[in-house]
Length: 470
Ligand SMILES: Cc1cc2nc3c(=O)[nH]c(=O)nc-3n(C[C@H](O)[C@H](O)[C@H](O)COP(=O)(O)OP(=O)(O)OC[C@H]3O[C@@H](n4cnc5c(N)ncnc54)[C@H](O)[C@@H]3O)c2cc1C
Image (cartoon, rainbow, N blue to C red; front, top):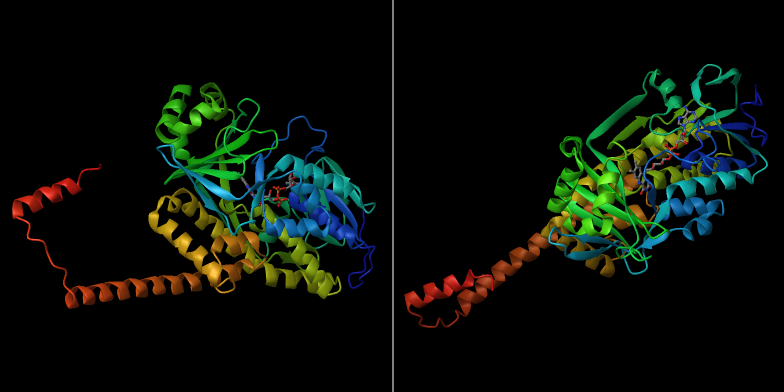
């Protein structure tokens, strides 16, 4: 079937765009292209998830923040989606002894949203369906495509399909990307981290949330951690991230309880011992992969977006947000370059590759920050210093998390600014410490305190008393 217009230079609105992968990014992208007047064919390997009884996939809920919201806003979906999200203003850190301490995400009024993944996907499908120029083709698993002719072949379909532009939104294990791998000067790397994740449900207690709902709860335990995000049905979705070798040691229900007693004792009564044993073994721990590649386009024929271009570990809550922002960035370039694919696609690669790679690196960095640094006093002190400086110099000092989550500053610029301000703040703190020590010493020498005449044995017993915890 040939959908293409065979008119590569034309900017005619009748051009056909094939979006391969009807997941989060694919469906949003389809709306963007349809809004510009293209005929859009979406090819999704699964059946329509709105009709499916069980939807297999990744995390049950995910975090939506500024970049994702801006992208949804452009197609008029922001309000619908946020009305079904739960705002989270702070992280709530659960210490081993059960104490809880909040660390705000940003300034007063800034928050991220916990969103139901399946519902978001369904909303996006329904939004795509409202455009008369979008066709949703379910159960179409792409097997291959030809870089020479652009013809796509699908599982169980004999006929080849052609379009003017192929947009690969088929996720971290993209079949579209496979053809890029055969091209010279295409760079590609993928890294599996040694940690896996599994999900456990924390049910409501007496019809109410078991913990405070307007927080992202974190149990940081250095080499591993658990997080929990609230859902509209008043459950929490807990995700345990841990090295695979540790998962392998927990082989029975009793060992699960023993493990939780040791590391997350406050969570046992909230989840319930039986539910915990059941959920822990419901699915094996899932792997997490980070993908970097360049370029994101092939000629004027094909472009990679979302996880197909830059899958990342989930610790900055940015994978989907960055994928949604991809749609916005491509759209902005389409405006600038008059929808001429032969100019738009190379420009998209030039602009977006440094950002895709920067956020993949930041996501890796945040894994250490979430499970390890939040336990450190220096880290917490620096957070307060950063936030304080941000209040008095809002344009110069901007906390890293704020730049990533609450702005559309390009990710690679975020990293540059972060390194610069880190250096400046550390040098400033060092300077302040040196001035205090020097000033203190001068005052001590200039005005020595009058020392009480205490006998040596009394001095010893006073020193001993200082060691007592009370
Ligand atoms: C545990 C976990 C938690 C996460 N939390 C967050 C978060 O809080 N915030 C955030 O922003 N991101 C989060 N992410 C990342 C986010 O899930 C992804 O970045 C996002 O799903 C990417 O969307 P996508 O449409 O590019 O890919 P996908 O969601 O993977 O969709 C790809 C689609 O393509 C289809 N497909 C695949 N192969 C083919 C084929 N050959 N032919 C046709 N169709 C095909 C698939 O069926 C699927 O529908 C998390 C990820 C994980 C694993």
